[in-house]
Length: 82
Image (tube, rainbow, N blue to C red):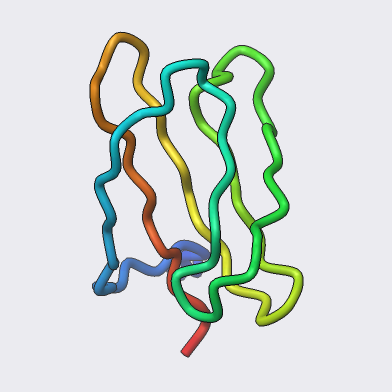
């Protein structure tokens, strides 16, 4: 009998926003859906340039990436289960 595969690959459309990287690396970001300020989380202390932004109003999630020594940052609107 073949074992059941737990991981399923799906295609997803991702909305991506490029923005000028802040000079002091102090980040403030707003939700692309409702414009509310995002609660920023830094889940990996070894990767301070990567953050997770969560909108406490409409519950959308965003990945924010500020690569070191780059003039642009990237914000990706993460898809939900729909």
